[in-house]
Amino acid sequence: EPKYLNSAESPTFVKGRTLYGLSWAKNAIRRADRVILVEGYFDCVRLMMAGLDEVVAPLGTALTEPQADLLRRYTKNVFLLYDSDSAGLKATFRAGDELLRLGMAVQVVTLPDGEDPDTFVKAHGKDRLEEHISHAIDVFERKIQILERHGSFADLRRKRAEVAGVSRELLEREIGHGAETARGLPPEPPLPDDFEASREPEAPRRMPRRDVRRTPGVRTEWELVHVMLHQRTYVESVAERIGPEEFREPALRAIYARLVSTAGDATVDDLAAGLDEDASAMLESLLAEVGGLEDAGRTVQDCLATLQIQQLHDAMREIDRQLPLAAGSEQDELMLRKKQLSDEWRSLGGRGWKSFGGTRS
Image (cartoon, rainbow, N blue to C red):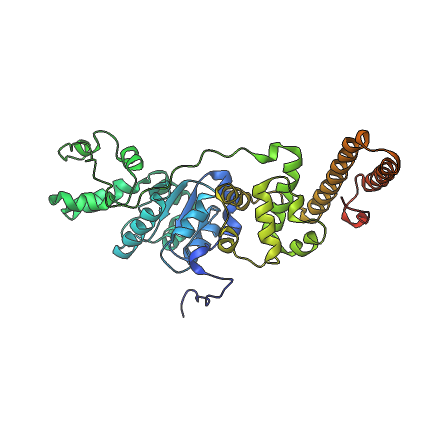
C-alpha cells in the first residue's frame, strides 16, 4: 500500500500551482516568518502532528515556480527539509534554485544519514528536530559542501554553472566577499561583465505602489474586490448592484470588470492576462492578503452601501454645480432630483444592500 495516492489533475486542480498543507499552515507561516518545506505529504502531516505548524509540501512533484511564488506571499525565509539520501539532495537543490530565482532566503536542514523528516521526528521528537533546523545552512553553502566532497571544483567552469541561474546581486550577497578563501579556494576576480550576457534580461523593478487602502473611497472598492476574489460566490450578486464604470480606482475597475465578465469563474492567470502594470500589481496585492474574510457577507453589504451613498453624494454635488447655471423649469427639475437623492441617501444610511432600491445616479 502506498503512503498516499495522487489525485488526478483537472481544470480546477493543478498540482504545480498549489502546496499541500498551505491552508492549515499559512497563518503559522506568517507568525513565524518562515516556512519548512518537506518533500511529501506524509512528512508534512508527521511534522504537524509533532507541533510544527509552518510546514508545507509540493503535491508529489518537484517544486515549481508558481509554488515558489505562492510561498513568497507569506514569507521569504524557507527551510528545506528533504530526505538525506542522494535523491533528496537533488530535490533540495532543485527546489533551492527555484526559490533563489525569486529572491528567497533559502536554508538547508541536514538530517543524519538514512533519516527522513518522518522517521526522525517520530524517533526523536520536535525539540531535536528544532535543533537541526537551528543549525541549517545556506543552500549555497550546502551545495558547495557536496561539490567539494565530489571534487567538482577541479573545473572552475562547473562551479560557475552552479550559480549562473542566480542574479548578480543575490550571488554577491549570499557568497560574500572572501567566501572562496574561507573555503580554501583561491580568491577569484570580480565576475566578468559578460557573465549575464547569455541570460534573459530581468524585468525592470516596479516602484512601490501607493497603498490605496489609505484613501477612504478607494479603500471601500479594494475591500469589495478583495472579498470577491477570494470568495467568488459574491460576484454575481455584487455585479447586479454596481458596474465597473462606478469604480474610481482604474486598477480596481479593471480587475472588477474581469471578475464580472467571467462570472467569477476565471483562474488567476485568466484574470491577470491583459492587465496593465498597475492592475497586475493591484491583483497581486489583493491575492496576497488573505485576512479580513471572517465576515465576508457583512463586508460586502457594508461596501455596497458605502459605495451607493458615495454615488448619491457625487450626484448631489453635480446638481449643486449645475443649479447656479439653471433657470425656470430646469432649476425646478434639478431641485426635485436633489430632493429625491437626498431622501434615498437618508433611507440608505448605515444599512446594507437589501435596502438598495432607489434611483441610481
